[in-house]
Amino acid sequence: MNNNSDDLQKDVENLKIAQATQAAAFAGAQATQAAITAGAAATQAAATAGTLATMIAGSVALIVGIFLGATLRHE
Image (cartoon, rainbow, N blue to C red; front, side, top):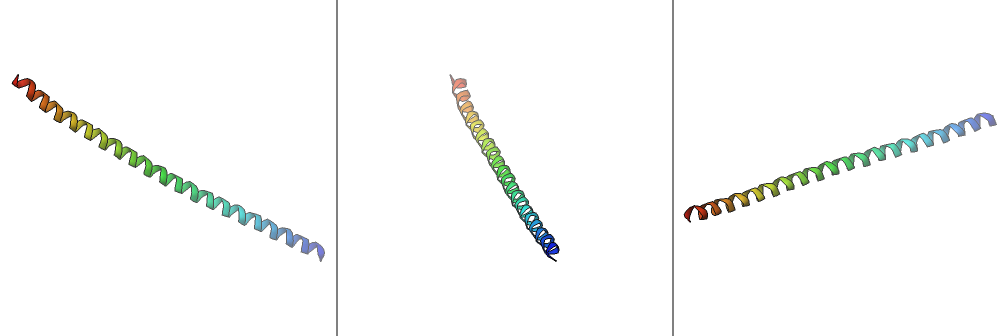
């Protein structure tokens, strides 16, 4: 009877370890997904900011070029 009790105790311990391992793996997967989402959002924000900055610089250069061209043309 004692042998069966020992086997049962070992099985319970193994199940506890398996459950803890599964919980840790799930938590790791959730953390990875959160990092991927945050990275994608940061990449999108940087791309948008870079595009906007390029458009603003291009617009300023165009306006300066128009006025410079108009000034040179009148001279």
